[in-house]
Length: 202
Image (tube, rainbow, N blue to C red; front, side, top):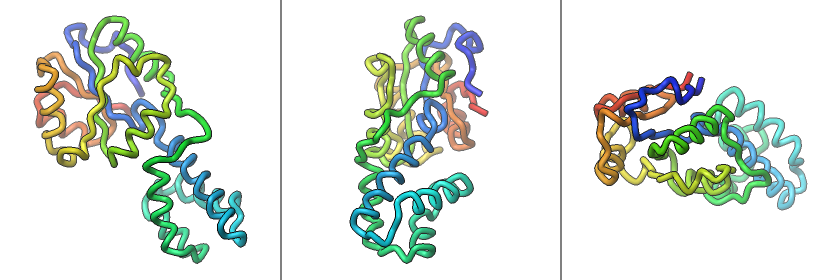
C-alpha cells in the first residue's frame, strides 16, 4: 500500500521511487506489448489468431509473469524462434495503444511531494530502453518536469549501490533526509547498504 505524504517525516527532502508496481502497474505495459505482438503474429502467420494467443499469454502472465513467456509460446503454438527478437524489440520501443496510468495513491503522493517542494527521483531496474519507453508513455499529469530519472542497469544490478550512490552524489543529497520507496528485498537491501531511509510498498 502506498503511504500518504503525512506518513513521512517532514525532514525528508528527497524521495526516490522504483517504477514498476510502485508508481505504475508493470502488467499494464507488458500486456499491451503482448497485444501488439499477437496482432503482429496474426498478420504474418494467418494460422495464429491474435485473441487466442493473447488469452493464453494473459493466463500465463497472471500466473508466472514474464518468466519464460516466449518458451511457453513456442512449446504451445510451435512458434518460430525468429520471433523472439521481434518481441524483445517491442518491449524496448513499442508504441502503446493506451497511455500508462499511475496508481492513484502514487499520483496523490507525488503531487504532495511536489507541492511541498521536495525532490523526486526515479531509480528503476530493467533494460534502460524499456524503462524509458514506459516513462515516455505514462500520463504524469504535469509531474514529469519535476522528475529526474536514473537507470540501475547503466551501473550494477541491485543491491549493488553504484546507481544509488551516483544519484545521491550528483544531487548532493543528505542521506538522513532521503528515502527510497520500493517493493522488493533488493530495494530494501539497496537502501540499507546506502544508509538511507526505506519504505516498502505492500
